[in-house]
Image (tube, rainbow, N blue to C red; front, side):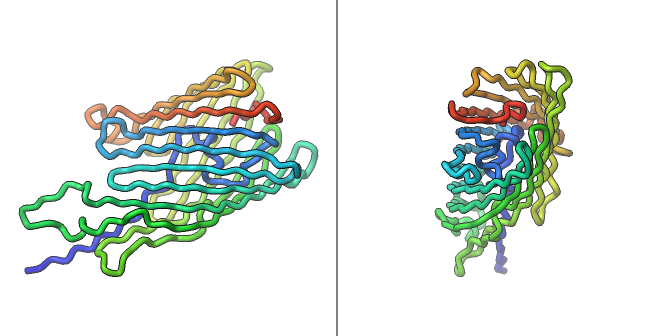
Length: 298
């Protein structure tokens, strides 16, 4: 008797961050040049520490206005590894801002990206009692695919809301002679937040991010942070039915900020017997000629 097994892999939802306000450029190109800011942001996330093959993600973003006040450009690099899968993405972002008034703006952005996907199925454990599994001999080796995305970002000194689709094209990676294939789906993002001045030295900053993709549950992140004396920020974040996180950040100077977060899964995976939680680090440098609104601090 012969058994034919066909393996179809749908990529996990795009890389996620607990400190999602600092990764806005990765999913919304209209964020580039936010408040005419020139900055560079680096993020690192180690998810489900202690689980072999758990996701590890690194991101680097740069954005800057140009000599034309309405136009801003940026670039980004992302490396995301989970189990036998490794994805590298490079993108160029461009945004155009319309000034509705002196402090009310709406920006429209375009993202052009290039993906490299590598799936090494030989890294998966297999039982050789019945011979080698033919599916595990059909890895995807640095398969290249271009993509394009877009977004819109509306903001005032106290409020913002963004809607974006970072990748319009649904890419199917396969080989006609292969028994395996992988598909990247289109993702939709909605993010928003506001600043409430409790006292001159104490700002409350709630925010949320909603991510939708076919074939996966709707993902919602809700965060509430406090900014104290323009220096210390702390709060918590909740990924609905998934994880709860603590947030802490410090503004060392007008130019340099660092933040850290720690997650515990709100599922059985969050038990200490499975893993030691997830850790995330963000570093941000804002150049001297920036005119950013530190009330948002992202």
